[in-house]
Amino acid sequence: MKRRLLALLGFATGVLAGSVVLRRRFGKRRDRVEVYFDDGAMVSYADGAPEASPLLDAARDALDAAR
Amino acid sequence: MDAAQALADLTEISSQIEAAVLFDAGGAVEGSTLADEAKAQRLADAAAHLLERADSVRSEDVAVTQVEASLADGCVFVVRDGDRRIAATTVANPTVGLVFYDLKSCLRDSVPEKPKRRRTTTKKTDDDEA
Image (tube, rainbow over all chains, first blue to last red):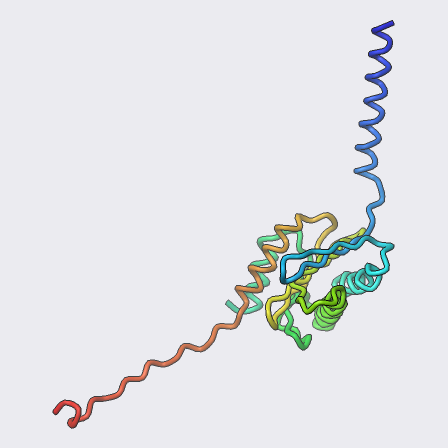
């Protein structure tokens, strides 16, 4: 009984670890932008935030221009 | 060191950087790794636009020094130092700190050297010697 429980626990841990690895590797990353200021502050906006849209549009233009 | 040499060194050092352009506050391109001048100008314009929009993020009078935009198929970096700027595009998921360091070094190295001042000596006249 105890051996069976340990096997089940091991299997569950393996599935959980595998899903984390797969999500990190193949999961869709959200576009984001980070702005650093003269006073040492930094703000980060992920795609979907209202502030991110104009910044990400300009960044996409820059990337298109270089390719 | 001139802009072309600094940019050549930059692309040699960093394999993550695909393209880079040095430009001034007015958007004029000083140098670029792109062979096509029109492309270089478009990159500089887009980077200036990005910096301009980043400046409006905070209402206080604090200048933006650098911006990093991470997109699915690559990243865009812009660094400002006074009136001079450098923008670069990289592969996806670059080593952000390293790219910023290399861009700052390039910006610093590409500062045009000021002409050396000539040393002037005044000849002593007979009156001075007396």
